[in-house]
Length: 365
Image (cartoon, rainbow, N blue to C red):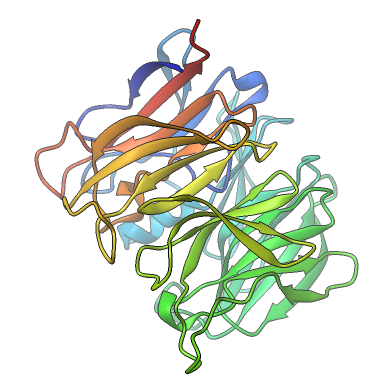
């Protein structure tokens, strides 16, 4: 498969996308949105990039995200979700969700919860673009430490009203609508080696919660399988069995109906993403645990086609595991013919910026 690559974002700036569980693509994939800021976390702005024109366009400054903690501000942007039907970006910041008009740059308050509560998630959008969901947490010192409990909420976008909210008995993240828009995948967040029930599903109409897959234990009851970085893939769920697992690791697919898991490609994977059909996947690699790759701060970006079991190395990049905005977080568009990821190839040290790499995939003649 032929690849056509473009590098996006100002050099020396930190350029990054919303979290890989959310698509940054506008309608018909004409553009994708991204964030850019200086190394000091100042001059944060929202941009969009038009691949066909090889052109970036600044949409609006994001100075209203006035957190003293730079990583918290970056977390707000990572947790945002784009609604391509209305060209609006929803950004959670503290106890408020803001709505940014991609065309005009206008910023409005969309939804607010009481003080001492804060939004997280990331936010997610239903496949019909009518519902918005995510997590909220209560704390006297927001964003400090992991909360013991969390809430999952669902909002109706047209009315700006809450449809349902349910308390969860643990810190939850990575909310994603599953096929049919009636249930939401979410993760039991926490230290990997202490979480045996990472993948969970919330049923919107009933409020019921169930564990989607129980991790494997050995005969002594000890965890030997560690799974995470899940992504809805067609009617199922893709995830990574990390190289810290004591059994074969790589890309796994979970059947939500049977609760069974299949290892489809063994490799040193870190994150995974999928096209809407769940037939094509893109992953980055890690270098710790039992991984065969041992070069620190270097990742391979790998494409895997489930239909023909074809595996292709797209790129090898310099990266870092220290900051979320420096993780490669590769992702596919809905059709599975465009790839985005974060690269640090053009930076000299671990404190400098990063750029976005766009790859268009075309079938070979």
